[in-house]
Length: 128
Image 1 (cartoon, rainbow, N blue to C red):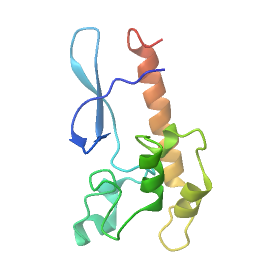
Image 2: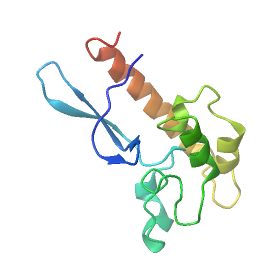
Image 3: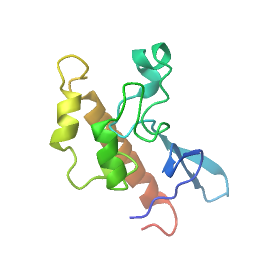
């Protein structure tokens, strides 16, 4: 199943995904700002540390290199939900980390994004 992508780009990665509907309108398909499914816009560390997020920083958020982002970039995935090994041990480790984890919320968010992308792609003419 093919995805129609476009929008703002950071390096080779797309932050927003768009498609043209049957009337030629450019419609926002889905937004995400991290590879792992973390909602960076809601992260308390973002403003404090002037963090741009892992997609915008090519896998190097405020604390340095991100293992999850490196994995997604090396596999040329837009986000972890596209990986055939999703959810992998690396993502689980980050998601369930006692200090900075979110008890699996980022994994669930990846599932939602993947479901929405699949749904929209199947609804887009020529992508069936």
